[in-house]
Amino acid sequence: MSSEYTSGAGNHGASYTISSLSERPELMGQHEAVGGSGWPEFMLHDPVAIANWGNMITDFAADQLFMLIGDEIAAVINTVPLRIDTDLAKLPDRGVDWGVEKSVADHESGIRPNALMGVQVVIGKDFRGKGLSGAAAGEMIKHTRRRGCDHVVLPVRPNGKHEFPLIPMDEYIRWQDANGLAFDSWLRVHQRLGGEIIKICRESMIIPGSIAEWSKWTGQRFPGSGQYIVPFALNPVEIDVERDLGRYVEPNVWVVHHCAQ
Image (cartoon, rainbow, N blue to C red; front, top):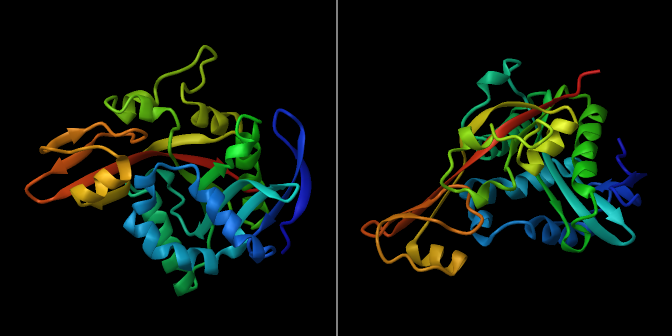
């Protein structure tokens, strides 16, 4: 099944081509570079993602999409197929980590997927502010329908939450804008596309590291034990000097798009 086609995109009406790594494997390097460009350094050190990324890219190359404008990748859309319970309230607290592990395990066991989980949508640095994020989320939904799956499930990382790291996620997602939509712009994108907020996944990713590693990742000093505010972290990072351990637990929000036709 080919996913490559040309469409219009964004608030500026830019034309783009949707393709996948299975169709354009020569763009792997650019795909990886753009995909990693949207995150603070510490987010690139989730041990579960690192352990499973190779299998994910190899086994699910057709589900690793990108938006091409000219010869450049403007956006990366990473998804994985998996089988979920029809009772969406059972989506687990372990969001990204659970989904990546389960997709690989389901594939190895021959379990037929009924959903795609969105792992990330990253807009390339030179293409931000052009309205491509909504178009990219829409392409994820279209791809899920073409795959014959019933749902897109996303452990959404609200992109404004890092500005309020001491506010519980439960409270943050209740904030609204003047139109009654979510205060958070990335949650609003999904609401406008028909996404349903299901629940919080409180331990979507867990990133441990030594104090030296956390200092390298953040450029900060951690002279004593306690909770530290780290730029772009949604929650404080817990530092334990005696154990030489920094531990960050990332909360996300399960959002589901219903794609059954």
